[in-house]
Length: 289
Image 1 (cartoon, rainbow, N blue to C red):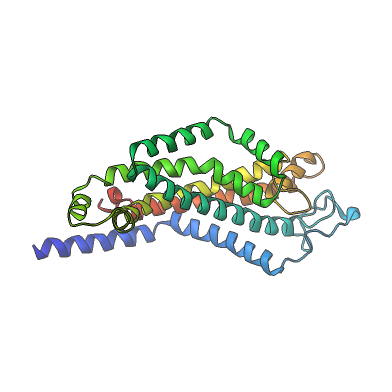
Image 2: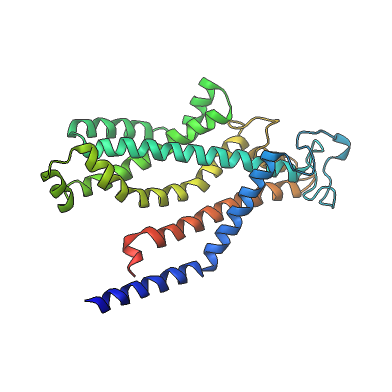
């Protein structure tokens, strides 16, 4: 009995070492580390040029030692704009996804563990909200409250909340009738104790994986809304507005479009690879393989 247990522990350590040696994991760490470093640089104001300083006589400059990614149509340093845009992208994605995940955990647990009529009411509201396309929903919210960072965060929460609620609800329904839950209930444990001690800890792993996968989608959503003029408005730096300028002036210079596309690609790859790694580490169906 002891030998199989020791062998299982040794195999588990080998699997963890193999996963840590995966180059995809280190690539995701590198890409996200660069993204976090850019956001920190923007927060501390350590960029080489003021991203909001206009110099029309110096516009459409190619990459050089002075301007690493060239300048845009107003003569602003493109590298500084991209660095400042990373702060906006991370804030919107992390706050939006984090808020949607917490609300989804609360509402989904109530739907799955509560009475049937409450579950049906929550599903009805979610199905009604999902009938609105994201762009149409964004246009409605922007028209009511005006374009701002907080408005984009609200759009992210509303558009992603349904997925988290359904995931948590499904997991809760599958857990509430398990043997260990019934045993805990027979010992006199109340719903709050069962949910907090047994249900939520078993839901967090898949919830974190899905949240990590949703972050690049949210970053792309923010960039798309800003590109369409429904998101961040100038002069606030955003990857979407920089991408819009690059598309509008692509005949003058291709560097602006390339500079705005690279961080979007890097952030998408970084969070996607991180989500894959978390799935390999946290998914019980894969951990034992």
